[in-house]
Amino acid sequence: MIVYYDSYCKLCTHSSVFWKKIDWRNRLRYSSFRDLENYPKAMAEKLHVYDRGQWFQGYDAIIAISKKLPPLWPILPILYVFKWVGLGELMYNTIAKNRKLVPVKQCGDDGCRIDS
Image 1 (cartoon, rainbow, N blue to C red):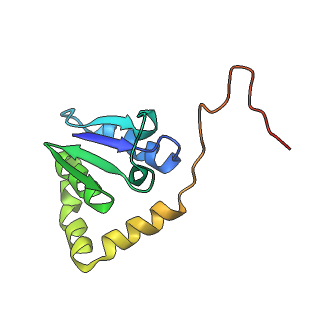
Image 2: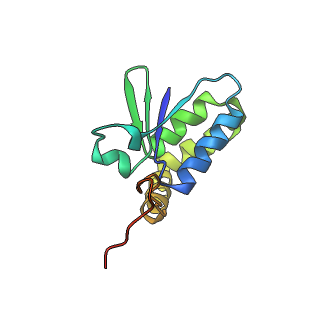
């Protein structure tokens, strides 16, 4: 499974670090979609996961990741209930729309220039 996260998003990078720490079986690989040449615009809006020829995004990506990480198995029933009642996607979208992005690696060797 490949987790395509947003390296400009502090919440996204912290989540990826957390998942990596509890991924004892090394079942997940991580890639910032920002490192891809022509990434789909949707990747900038929601978390994307690719697993066995299938794409998951947003709240479904969170569920797919949780299925691969045994420490998260106890919360899977709650995640599914939230999905079935529509609360999971609503919460995910609210958080995704309000996250803060900090572009990194955007300046040259001589620093950043601010045009007035």
